[in-house]
Length: 106
Image (cartoon, rainbow, N blue to C red; front, side):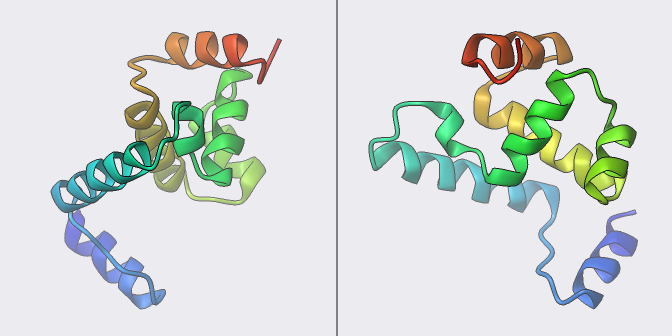
């Protein structure tokens, strides 16, 4: 699975990292942002992640989000995983609750 995905990603001219390396890079990136004084974990999200967070919080499935944003479901799942890591969320209910508290959805 990883080999097939790696070939696809590299063929598109993008870098590919194994999940373990990607997690390490993400943790390091988040640590650097936090050291620079970002107080709100929402600021750790990219614009695309914020967009996906809103759609997920509105009750859209990964497949729905993929269709709306013209992404693959795997890409949406990757973003969802990163969002949950960055915001320390553990379920879809946590995503919805977070979005309501932040005023992303009402």
